[in-house]
Length: 114
Length: 113
Image (cartoon, rainbow over all chains, first blue to last red; front, side, top):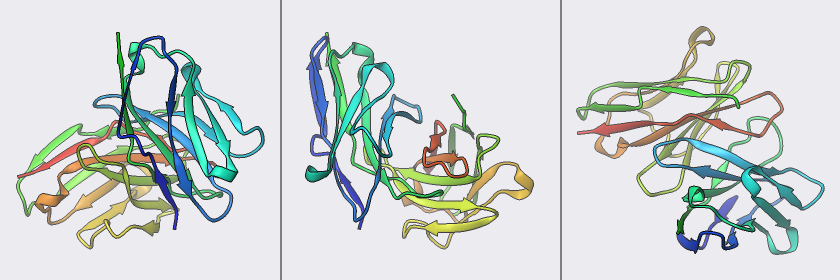
């Protein structure tokens, strides 16, 4: 069965520091992988996605993620965080093909302290 | 970017009543989804819908739940009757043909009293 695990429920980093949010997935086959961000009282916004090709994908606002198939991981990174990055981040996986549902991880709440 | 609109943003109803949550998906999208998020927890898939039919539903999609998109208008989630455990935020999403990227609305917070 498909599943996504985000082992860190909460992460706190200082403004300007680097960031890594961890994501591991379980999927038999070639998955599509996503990172979404949820700001308070808002819907999810897509940060980046991986379908195929270069395992390092770039997203919005300086975020990137690396697909490591051997480790079943898709960690999210940012070189220097800003206070406005404080939000909940969700990793998700789906099967290839249209209408494939997203399976989400538990989410990681990021707090950026000044 | 593309916008999915959900109306209302918050709805309060008494247990046992019927409620309809409305979603205005991105205009040229063909796949529609509902997700449920209990406060502080992950998003959980309820159902997806294409060409007038439910394609897949989870065990959370109880018999009291139904979805439809009459005449290409709002995509709706109806709960009849509601139960206390239905209190959550319900997110609608849509995606285009051949695309796996889902676009989410801001959610409707349903409070069942």
